[in-house]
Image 1 (spheres, helix red, strand yellow):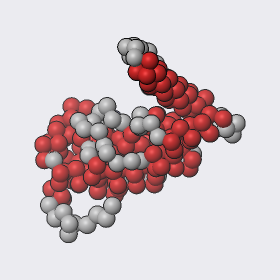
Image 2 (tube, protein in one colour; image 1 turned 90 degrees about the vertical axis):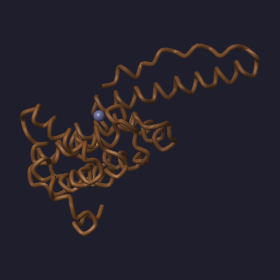
Image 3 (tube, protein in one colour; image 1 turned 90 degrees about the horizontal axis):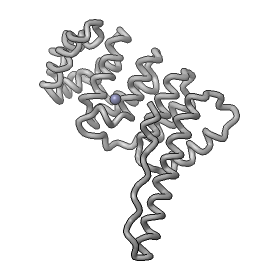
Image 4 (tube, protein in one colour; image 1 turned 135 degrees about the vertical axis):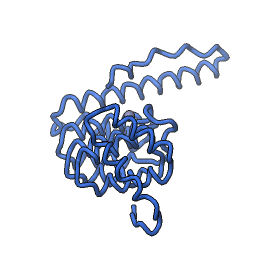
Length: 207
Ligand SMILES: [Zn+2]
């Protein structure tokens, strides 16, 4: 993301609001979030810039969290950069969450970041960041890269983090159930039978 005031000359007016995203009073944080949300695009841009440049880690974390709820695909470059390079682990973790989380957003992101999340899991040395990345990965659409990576991760004896493996296991089990259900539907359709009822999902167990 190239951030210059030339392309967005009016983003400096949001500095005071953005500062409040790092506050400890959740009501004040909520009021600042609402003001920024109402502005829309230019405020999102200013939040992205602060995510990459603000000296206070709590403000950067607040910026990443704002994007979890009010971000769109224009936020992905800033979130990706923060997920890879922010020096503070909790900022990287929230950036990873914001990229992968679909349930907090008004509209899901369209950008593909499977490769980015895999890179974070391979390179980040913080266990909580890695778990968040595996969870974010588990929220993405079924994908050959994802299936291969999770299989390798589950079978890798060098990966000792049980929490991380548990999330990967749930995702793989969910994929397996979806595949079996799809196979059963196809077989029923071929035999001219009514489609079987779906099995209850176990994905709620992951959190
Ligand atoms: Zn979220």
